[in-house]
Length: 350
Image (cartoon, rainbow, N blue to C red):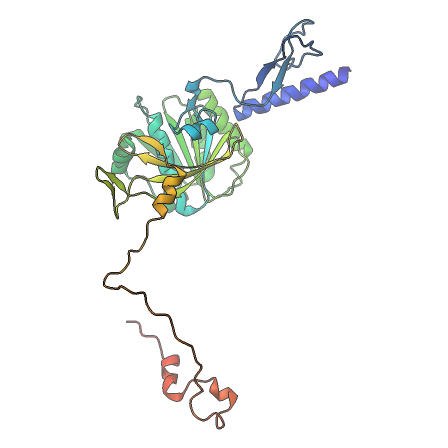
């Protein structure tokens, strides 16, 4: 009996330690009224057992935290699936499966940073290796001001020659409360970015109360200490909205396809979000709006033609050049002599 109680206490202690690392605190569930408790299950939290006290059961679940602990995206369905939004004091992973999605991933993170910077003038530090900045480029300063409302002096960059240096800068910066957020952008699936490295970043973010965004470009999904992983790609933009209706042939607000790869609630979901640069807010695109947008013809019908092109006639095979009796089967497969220079002549550069 004593061995069973010690085993339960060990399991509860391990669950609490894992929940602390992942940023999900265990909940306490009170037993129904009138039910006689058989044993105390909250001994991992502390306190001596009481014979007539209500039993408390620990289970892994949602963290009981105030609404200010989460960064709400403003999209009702996405925030509900994430149990309130992205955690502010935690490591969050924003993942792009392909290199061509680097712009979409960066734009989505900058949108989140725009929501964080509302009402505070603190700067944001963007850390990356020379390889990732050479491949994806740097954000355009004037575009930051016009699209996201981020002043150029609020975005600081740190270019590291190696991933080891970038991780060191991110860990040291995550301890600073003078920064509004830290962005660490990497490429691929390096071995140095393991559970130990991400746990350190997550712990520093929790202690400082600041978000750390891990941007992964063209890498496979691997285990990390981040409680939330969002997979982001570019979505087709709709036409620009005017008073008279959509403007044909124009490009509207930037759009993102966001899929939940990992969350505290373990609820899957895929959403199409549009960023409104005037309001600095996300707007969810409904599925029927997407179908209506895709139903528009991409190439307009050519003018001056009333009937479609006629169908092709019967395809016939012509005999080889010359008499079939005089030419051997091997010779029939060869082109005629006047045609030979066209096949073996040198290709013109001009």
